[in-house]
Length: 364
Ligand SMILES: [Ca+2]
Image (cartoon, rainbow, N blue to C red; front, top):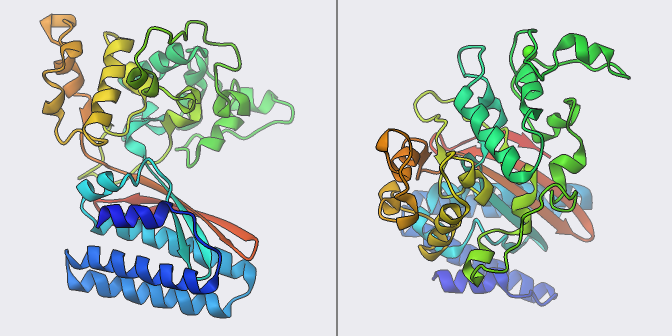
């Protein structure tokens, strides 16, 4: 079943209407069958959604059509993430490939990432007290060292997020923002999107979005002695700051946690989890994760890795130290749906809390 699904998602689509309709029908059938193995009511929801979507796109103008298609794509993503067992999603590779789905006479490309494997800038300030979270600040500082960017950058981020107007040693509060040309207003509140970092002194778009190696910030990146699997553990995308940090939070006291999801943490985040973490151990975690189909089913799966037996403070092993900082549970998904129909394109983005089964953020 999954192999069939993958074939249909990944194969180039012959561009005839008949083929498109047949393929679209096949996908709905296959997905509905997949869902039927869970519950019949869920399948009904899906079919109803598919029909609504089809009626919608047959009447609207091109611009609206593309937006509606993107929204349908987002809904499909939500259904997949909330109704299909996690094992099947990983087997399908939903987090590593961005499937392009023919839908309603156009196509929708779905890109899904799990966000709790990244360091969250909003967690630099404690949730219910207006104080710096020192453990989180250490994560960000070690990440900065690994990426070759200034470690003091995060003081200004803490000031931007915390409610008080007392600057950190290397930070900036209201007075500094008012002196900028032109003056800016400091938020003193949680960030909604990473782009907000660009308001903060010390940040620019190159720092946030460029491959930091291209800025000549990292010198020792020779990979000559690594095996192919080890080389593959670190990709150019890992050297982009924006791929290692996030702003998305689930405000749910029952499920919200500051544990880092080891199943979606990129290489440099893993490297920054402990001062005792080594590049060899961090790469091992990534290659072992790939070998296990993309995720560790339990933190205990890491317990016997020889690379994690290093002794840290208080005669703990690196594994023991890590085990109180990480989780194997997916906590928050970002879904980006790009639609294209009759050369009109549209994009929508949603952030999904899989435990509450609801979107906590939406933009188009
Ligand atoms: Ca502040």
